[in-house]
Amino acid sequence: MSEGSFPPPPPDRPPTSSRRRIGWIIGGTLLVLVIALIVWHPWGAHGRHGGPDALGPPGGPPGGPGPGGPGGGRHGGPMAANQTQAVRVAKATIGEIPVVFNALGTVTPLATVTVHSQISGNLMKIGFTEGQHVKQGDFLAQVDPRPYEIQLRQAEGTLRKDQALLRQARLDLQRYKTLVEQDSVARQTYDSQVSLVQQYEGTVQSDQASVDTYKLDLVYARVTAPVSGRVGLRQVDIGNYVTTSDTNGLVVITQTQPMSVIFTLPEDNIPAVMDGMSRDGKLSASAFDRTDSHQIALGSLATLDNQIDTTTGTVKLRAMFANQDEKLFPNQFVNIRLLVNVIRNATIVPSSAVQTGSIGSYVYLVKPDDTVTVRKITIGQVDGERTQVTQGLTPGDTVVTDGVDRLREGAKVAPSDLSGGASTSGASGAATASDAATASAASGTHAAHRHRHAASDSSAANTAPADTLSRRNA
Image (cartoon, rainbow, N blue to C red; front, side, top):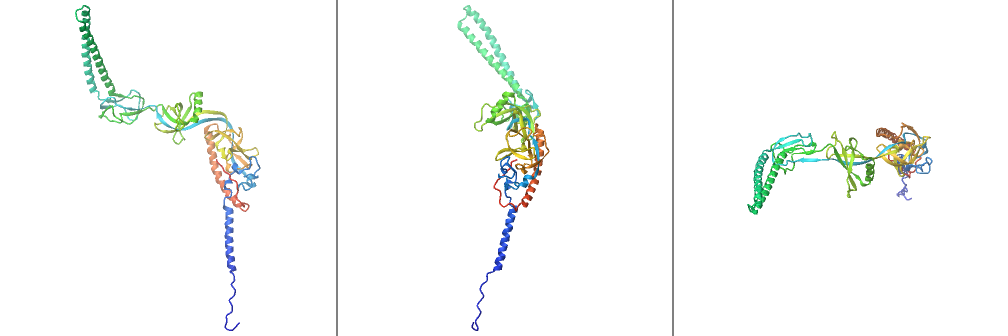
């Protein structure tokens, strides 16, 4: 190297330490994200609950190769199968269950009459109080009768005058008849007298009609109730001049006792209604309020229409109610429950025990060894908190009514609150369902809490999400 020259620069060294530091940061971040995803991601969220879709074939081993086996959900492992679950149960019973058709109806009075004055005149008197009940023929109002009394007297005077002329003409006719027989008068004179008598007879008849008309006007001057019912608001006050053409009339009377309800049913229900009417004569009908929670009145089916409405495919029916307490008000909307039949010796379970899934309707059947199995059933009539089972169960079978969200095929259970089964009365059935609903809400909260901790403890073992989907429909 010559004097005065600079040494060559050192070769570039890769920033090994910086790159290594960046790599560790990226790797650590990815590792944290993967761990967090494994711990918190709801693998197989649809398989949390033990519905029939999360199980192997009914009757198969817990945790087997079916969808309910390993990886079939958080509770699909052997540990969940060995845990004892607290559940509420009930026994299937034999009882009666009604066949009821529900419909929306309108309260329709049998008669609604707008009372009009049938003559014209000043309104002199009102004989009713708004809202009161009247009977047919009761006095309602008085129209000034004096003009019609005068016209009646005039018509009666004309009638008496014409009656006198008729009597005289008849006497003359008798004389002419005798003279004609004696050839004392011409036949033409006799014939003229016959015509005169007939003329006076027609006049008297017309006068009598006028008298009857004015008498009827005097009757109409006193307005009476045409039907029995409840009086509405007064439409005209005393002193007004009323006519026969008044649109609003004097008052409206609505017949409220008895009261009818018009409702419709699908045409497919009509055969059952007709069979019930021919068998029992009358079918029981109950009217409930708009919320369908409070019974307003109890009556019976009176009749149904003679044709189907082709635009809606429904038939109109009329139910009659005594309505002594007048809880049914005209044009009110009510819910009608029509009892058409009662099924006897039916197998009944609480409605809370019936679940729905891909296999259809099913229940969790408790076996003698306190394990459960899925039992597919066929349901019939549903009466609120009671459901008829036509296939799949026999009386005495024990089914789970609450806690089904924690169950799977073969799970161990601890039955509690064992009742006599589905109540044969609506009241006790409703009480059982209320208790079951309360327990279900509480158990669902605790179950969700346990699910989260179980997922955290087993996150290392779960390497892939489950392929199966389970669902539970209460």
